[in-house]
Length: 186
Ligand SMILES: [Fe+2]
Image (tube, rainbow, N blue to C red):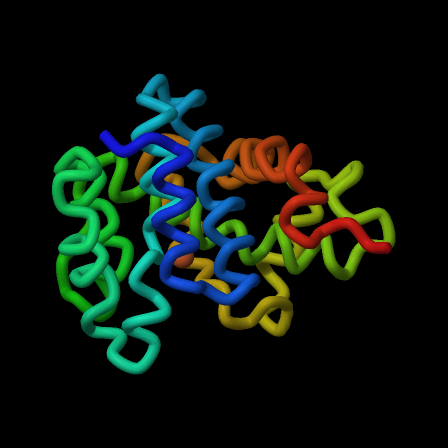
């Protein structure tokens, strides 16, 4: 499997916008946290998170290709289960349904990053002291981070995890990297 350093270089070689680099890093962090909680391989899950949107600069205008192109770009570099998860994270367009734990984890993890990061940006203290209950409130506020799919976040329940536990994992994963992903105010 590709090393983490090479995965990062590969990601950057496609000149993603900065917000997509931040999204990749936060998705990786949450996936590593999920792998820890579910006793899965943190390297495979983390790198799947890091690279899941690698084709985004190339598929911005062809969303039906998003995930499929990534799978081609990453063939041989990641285990098949990770490639399948990257494809299934865009099932709304590709029609390829998530089935495995890794498929489900990638979808809810890469989506929860949007809720956590938007919350950090509106809180004066950023990530510091963020609690799952504050994210639960934001889940109900449809106008908050409106593009973040609540249904996808709730897919954590298919992994036997309630949203409170899932939010705690996401908070614990993103807090230590807050300053690297634009979440610390100057
Ligand atoms: Fe994503």
